[in-house]
Every structure is written in structure tokens, then in C-alpha cells.
Image 1 (cartoon, rainbow, N blue to C red):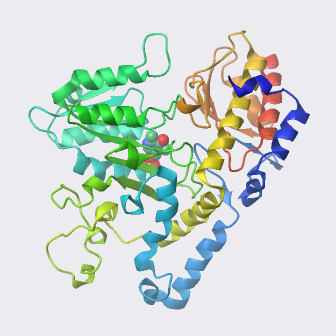
Image 2 (spheres, helix red, strand yellow):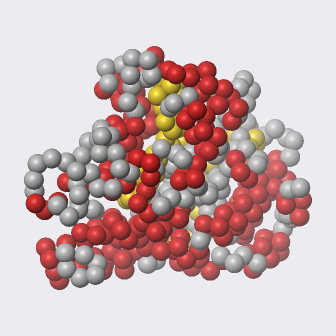
Length: 429
Ligand SMILES: *Cc1c(COP(=O)(O)O)cnc(C)c1O
């Protein structure tokens, strides 16, 4: 039975939910933007997470280290930059469900997709196809297209894009698996989102990985919208590789550092082709400055360049908050918060056909985001939100994405959104 049967569309109900929320104090750790001088109701954590109040101090500390120690900061003191990558590992491992040696923070997301493809897409004459979801995030599409061309292959012959069934908005797991089985021996790789940015659908990464492995292919996921949003178990699911960004649900600042996951079974594979740099080379011998690349064990062996210390400082500010809250508690709140949003939207739009939620309604098939198709009123419905201090996200041609995040959004935020949605639909739909 759904918990939504107990929900109420009322101020007092929202208030009581907030009072019972064990994570309610975390909201105070973040800085909210203003719309027309008033604190916004912010539902865009799926695009750019809010700034933790502590971020400034974390960055300032590294600025001080740089000022005080300059080049000595690389090796001296307990916070020596030479080892700074290690700091983020416990939190990252907890967030994506991995061992610490399977993850490392480095580069940016699209760069990492390319670097991981170099290692994990190894087309042969017979096995060269790639399965992905249709309508993937553009950077991922451009990445796949150009990786395939880089291997001298034709994207039209290599990339299989999976679309929902006619009249549906999201993919069925059984259809994804059937496509993998059909591609069979010709399939080299499944490379898709873990959580689809447009529809908000979470794919069954374990089932997809199992199916890929059964036909002898590899499975990799772009977790831009999944990391810090839903529970992941990349190690146990035996996913080959994954990458994500830190500026969406992980609140680490615009364009900040990405992270990668490489499964343990690839940890000691010096034979795996890669584009290397000195930071992936055996740490003990790195400063011998000698020829002959010897990769470090695990994900670290994919690092290229020395760590971006200021970026990692901002990342750490947020990761420490995640460690304090814990993914289990975050997810428990998130399921309720999104279910409440869904309940209110249904209360308001009912069977009028004005709004359609295209995100799956089962909690295991979605994160915090709901994507709404606006059938009547168009962008005017959305523009009314902003005039009333709500920051959401409009995607061409008619989708509104609303992402209440469990770290800093409240049930009252969701309630207030619903009041404004009601008003907006009365005016424009
Ligand atoms: C946000 C997002 C990106 C952005 O990539 P950057 O390299 O960080 O600019 C790429 N892919 C997906 C699926 C995303 O959601």
C-alpha cells in the first residue's frame, strides 16, 4: 500500500511532516538563493545543488595552506595535497556503494566518460555494438558518437538507442534486457544513464549489468543524476565502470570535479588500454620521473593529472555533510518527500489531463525528481512559478522538472509549490 493515502493537502500537515523529519536541521547548512529579494523555494538540486555554508571555510583553508606553505603544501603536513584524493574516498564509496579503491574524484564528467570508454569499449570485428537509451543527455550522445568515429566505425551501425514503447515515456527493464540478448555476441558495451535526466527514471542497473555480462559485454553508467540521489551498490551489482558529477545532488559547486568507479576486478589490469598521466602512475615511483607507465591499483590508476585542490575542498565540504546525514536516512526522507509532491500534484490536476507525471510512480524506479508534462498552458504555467519564488527547471518542449532534495528541501517547500501550481493552473491552463 502506498504511504500517499495518509497525505493531506494542508499547511498543518506539511508542518507536522517537517517537525517529524530527523534531517530537518540540515537545511540550515545551506545558502538559499533569492528571487526578487525573497528566499527562493529551490527545486533545482538536480541541476546545481546549493552551496553549503561551510564551503567557504574548506576553500579558505586550502588558500591558507597555499599561502603559508606554497610548494611545500604538496608533501608537508597531515593535509598534504599529494594525498588529497584519499579524503573524499570514504564518502564517495558510501554514496555509490563501492570499496574505496574503486572510486576516485578527478576531472569532469564528460572527460571521464571519454577516458573510461578508452578502456572499456574495445570493439572487435564481431563485437562492436553499444546499447544506450534514446534521448540521452547530449554530452553523452556526442561522447558516444565521437568515440565510435575515433575507432574508425560508423555510429549508425554501432549505437543501438532504446526507446520506450509506443505511447509510453519510460523504458521497461524487460525490453532493455531483450535488446541486450538480441544484440548478443555483437554487443561490446551497455553505456547508459543510471537515472535518466529527462524522465527521472532509474534503470535497473543490476539487471542490465547481469544481462550485459551474460552476452559477454561490459556495462557502464553515467550517474550524474543518480549519485547522491538514490541508493547505489555498484560493487555488488558488478558494474564495470561509472562516472558522475559533483555539482548536482552533491552540492560541490558549478562545474566541480567528477568521480569515477572502476570495479575491483579491473583493479589490477595493467593490460587495460588507457590514456594515462603521471597521477595514475605508481605513487611511490612517480617522482622518479621515468619512462614506462605503471598504473596504480584500482580507480586511482585512471587519474591523469594532479588533484585540483580548491575544487576538492569544495567537494569535501558537501561530502562531509553527506557522511553526517547518511544515504539511508537521506533516501528514506526523499521517498516520502517525492511521494508527497506526487500526491499534491495529483490532488491538483486530478484527471483533468492538464499535467502528466512521466516519472515512474514506484519509489525504486525514481529518485527525488518528478518530470511533469504540461499538456495545457505551456511555459506560462512554469513562468508563474518563478514569479512566485520557485526555482524549477523547464525542458523544451513541455517538461517541468521538480526535484525536492532531502538535504535541504522541506515538506513545507513542497506544499508551497503545490499552492502556486494550483494558482498557476487556474490562470493559464
Ligand atoms: C549533467 C550531465 C552531464 C554534464 O556533463 P559535464 O561534463 O559535467 O558538463 C553529462 N551527462 C549527464 C547525463 C548529465 O546529467
